[in-house]
Amino acid sequence: MSAKKWTKIEEILDGKKTDETVNIRGWIYRTRSSGNIVFIILRDSTGILQTTVKRGSLPDKEFDDAKKALIESSVELTGSVKKDDRAPGGYEIQVSRFHVVHFAEPFPITKDHSEEFLLDVRHLWLRSQKMTNILRVRSKIFEASHKFLRNHGYIEVQPPIFTTSGSEGGATIFELKYFDKKAYLSQSWQLYAENIIMAVEKAYCIAPSFRAEKSRTPRHVTEFWHLEVEEAWASMREMLTLGEKLISHICKTVAKECKRELTVLGQDPKKLEKITVPFPEITYDQAIQILQKKGHPIEYGKDLGILEERKLVENHDKPLVVTHYPKEIMAFYKKKDPSNPRVTLNFNIIANEMGDEILDGSERESDINEIIKSLKEQGSNPKDFSFYLDSRRYGSVPHSGFGLGLDRVVMWICKLDTIKDAIPFPRTINRIYP
Ligand code: 4AD
Ligand code: MG
Image (cartoon, rainbow, N blue to C red):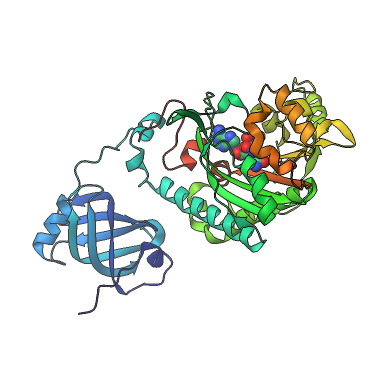
């Protein structure tokens, strides 16, 4: 006997199986019965579909089981596909066999959809249509990123997660005991990357980064997935162009390959198709002028926070690039602009609509003395950065890189109110379970 063939709900919704008899399996999403008929909405990983179970169309025992099975019970069924405009998605299945694989206990998620409750039962809430669609789009975003960078000749190099020094400052570093030494969870792969590129020239990674963020904002988590690129010989301009192309490629791929998911999530794929390069671009100085003109109180020298970033992208339909921030508020590795040493050769990309920084990059300082000076100014001991400084001791070259916060990209593309919904099991200052 040949093995049973299983049809995915997606294929039925795409109209590929109309009037055929199919086998499908999944979980009960909704159920309602009246007398001798049960309406069951079934879900699998690809969508939801209405099924109708009528007494007399299948063995009595199977009808009784269908009637008894609660939400989230797992089932396998056989039936014929009919077009029906009244059914959600336009199709339904008339069931001829119904097998309950497991009778679920009463499912805890009913009416209470408060954010905290849904985070408490995150492992179960992942089954919702919203989370399933987000996970599918998220996977496509990761896939598109890998493909784009590999097609452009970047080598994937995995960074360590246990580290001995941070790149982004002490305030957000997680310290831990590493046998009899102190260690830190990686904030960024950058210090390693600047050595890696002296070997492979063009490198990238997609890995978790950790930040002990005490702020409870909708865009900060303590563990996030960081796409980072580093390239020898590359200028700030070349890296910025690469970052814009990468973001545009992600948007177009998702628009093409996740149409249904995006539409369910309230995102218009057509809008994403229009995220083409180049993005509009201003300098930090211009940003301050624009903000002051809009009546927003900000002085030169202050970093741009969420309020400022939101104001800057008001009415934009593409991300906005802001370049050349003041040296004093930038990390020690960012290169001073030779034509204006008050600022660095850096760039941030702010997502339109969401109004949050998604990408942060720069040309790197190649002069070891400048770096040592900046390290001392921020209160760090250059000795702790000795391996990093070696990249400037043995054949230092101009180079640039960036970091893209992939969870923020998911949040932006899926139009989510909080970054937590972009992540299957989000970690924040007050949540590490489940
Ligand atoms: O701006 P950040 O801190 O820059 C760096 O870490 C550089 N070393 C990157 C590089 O040049 N290789 O982080 C980069 C991006 C931010 O633009 C943001 O999108 C994301 O990472 N990010 C966070 N996402 C979620 N939660 C947090 N706490 C984040 N912190 C940064
Ligand atoms: Mg930043």
